[in-house]
Image 1 (cartoon, rainbow, N blue to C red):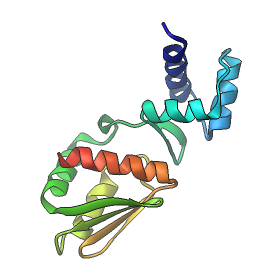
Image 2 (cartoon, rainbow, N blue to C red; image 1 turned 90 degrees about the vertical axis):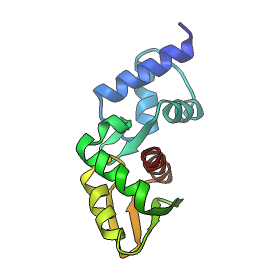
Image 3 (tube, rainbow, N blue to C red; image 1 turned 90 degrees about the horizontal axis):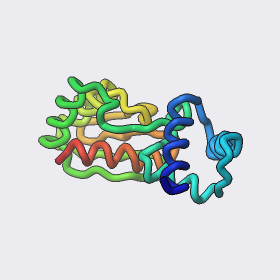
Image 4 (cartoon, rainbow, N blue to C red; image 1 turned 60 degrees about the vertical axis):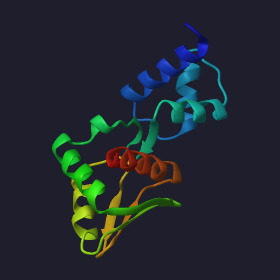
Length: 148
């Protein structure tokens, strides 16, 4: 097994067993396990492993983590009502058909996507708040995957 593969398996294990709030903390835990690495390498590993920082620290987020019932309803709504979906800093901005913003915002809240701090929805626009630009990017990825 390559050292990169071992390091990434260890990162997955550490994230699953600990509440890790920042990359420095993860780097310290890796050192305790005998793995020396740079912050840039950790950033790449986190991105490649689909690990993002949520309100409770780092977590592996896959679509399976979102409620299946709400996920189907959310996917249906996204496919039929969303016109545009883009990241704007730490926000995700969704433009919908008129009258669909608020119902979509409710469905996004009900899906309990870990990176979503909250939503604000109007008639044809939904703002999704996250804590970081990387979380907003991850939410965009999740919603685009649902749109397919």
